[in-house]
Length: 192
Image (tube, rainbow, N blue to C red; front, side, top):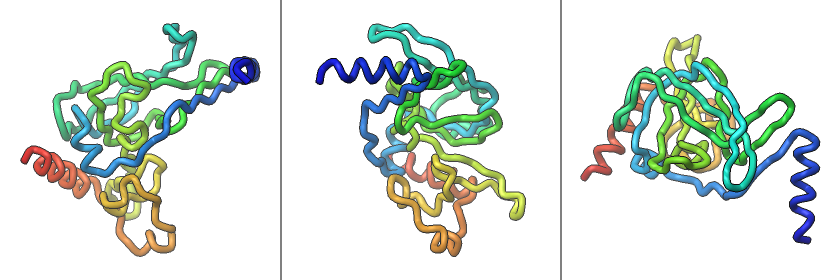
């Protein structure tokens, strides 16, 4: 039994795909996400690159994502921020980490940065620390969505299952200004 895991990993690497799931994500409340962050900002993904990393446990892929900061919501952040995430793709070799957010150039997100440096993910709670910001061409507003792109209908739903589309369609998604006010309220409540 002890020899099967290395053999399976070797086969996965030969096939060019390795999925790593070393932890279970525990859902976080909105307050936990905000209070657990050293910094938070609204930013646009402007670049990403993956590299090989040689660490004490062998070779792995890491991805560096660069963000142009539009607005700081908590802490202090430079105008450009580069974050390091474990996993990614180099050529045909892919390393996936369960719960790790994926970014594409042009994505706009509110990111909550964890105080844990050199972690697998720099975000609070992996994907829980990412809120997508999508421009609605019909209404002309920016809407805030969960990490999977589903409409965020209220911060009480963070860390819980999404509402079915039929129910969610009857409720207006949260606009970015409303979301920012909720972040500021959560910071104020945490400071008391």
